[in-house]
Image (tube, rainbow, N blue to C red; front, side, top):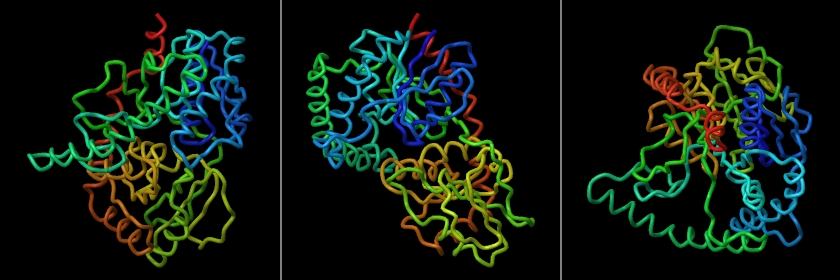
Length: 381
């Protein structure tokens, strides 16, 4: 089978697409990944990387308008992608959830397509509070009434988004009503999902899709103190200054810090801390606690390794994920970023075994997933 995968350049979306491309290639299928130039030089056997045109904002684009950014840009990307997909003639297109142009282009060509969500399912639900609120499902009369009110407050925005999507679709020759993908791959740790009464029948939890962008292994600082792994957010909405706050907060406590970053800054660090681009999966084998921003990639990687987390969430879905992990018992949330608060959270996790136990319990749920390649094969049969 020939598969075209489409994902933007942000690490939280490109890396899962790369990981899935690798899975296809290892299963004997031809995988072509359309993405941003940041990932052109990756070396994944059996995977071809091609440029995804239309990622650069046009003069008329308004990135401050979420609807314009998601829908109009998606239609523009779809139009530019059509010639490449027509020449490739894939059997299936896998399109990242926020790079919706891949799905639109596939629909134009009559090619089956699958949506890849590199996080829990974020579709609105009649049984959940609005996604992004970070709230647990309301219980009792008052709690259920709260959720009804909150859903009502977001309904107008949802309808506006549907109208904007329809206009964008019609503009590139599609019917106004979006039929949606043939299937949805929900690439998360099951422990981060929440039950909902309206789970789509075509949505499949396939487990997180991890890929390491480097072969370098960072050596932690010498000593036998607790190892704190720091992974600052790669998202533009993430909190800045995390490594500085961790080093300030943990100074004098006898701990060791190792920070992994896609773009190390070369900042001065104390002798008990190191930073660089290194394999996170290797460091997690010895880490006692992770300090991260709550982006799904790092959080899912930590929980898959059974390592508890201190989460300093920024905007976007980080607040939602942070609270889900905290309710599951494997994380402490710190907001806003504060050195003393980070120190207290790290000490709490190290002193109370219940956090590590919960993290291992989350890791155990990773076996209760479906094979994403098998789901895709079923889609085209």
